[in-house]
Image (cartoon, rainbow over all chains, first blue to last red):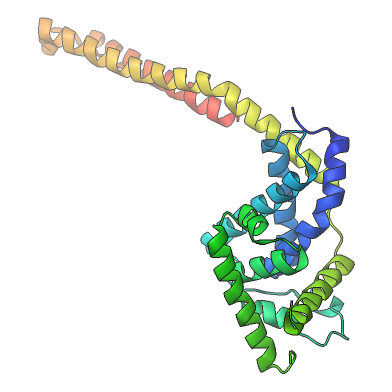
Length: 160
Length: 112
């Protein structure tokens, strides 16, 4: 059975923000993140059936979003992390760490893994389900991503 | 979680909050409408698939049948023994059958 509009509204309200953040942090572009966000929920409505648990829907949405990011990367778009001008203006001027520079320093997969682990609070199994990677791969890649992020920030003197 | 992990977590959370504050998500109704349009298009494609297969099959059958008829006619009597009017009519009929099938296939593609 397909989702009702009210059920979809609840799912959208609960998940659109986190998915948009994930896409924006992975691509570095708000316009692309907006487009991919709509496509993610569109695919959920076309493919998924009603009655899924909230956690399963969340994992499913992150899986779709990750697949869309991978497709974009494979098509040759989105290799570089760019931030449009208006986003730079809206960033917190008091932030001691230049997160945008750090994210730009990492590759797309590293950005995704760090975001899922630190912002979404997912464990290795959940990240594996959301990205389609094996659990051991997640562990290794996350370790590398974390090390690269810390190395970059340490080089800038922001982490001691 | 050590101190640098915590700092990294806080930094990413801060960035997440700045994204949320500076950019609102598109309205859910727009996504719902987009999905509904896509569902309708997919349903039409599914419904028309057997029709398109039959049209393509019809086109192939028409070409094979026309070739076979011409071959039979040629083996019974040499083509030169037919009058020019008969040959022209046969050729025109063949072309009309092929063009008709082709037009049907094109029309069904355009309707999607």
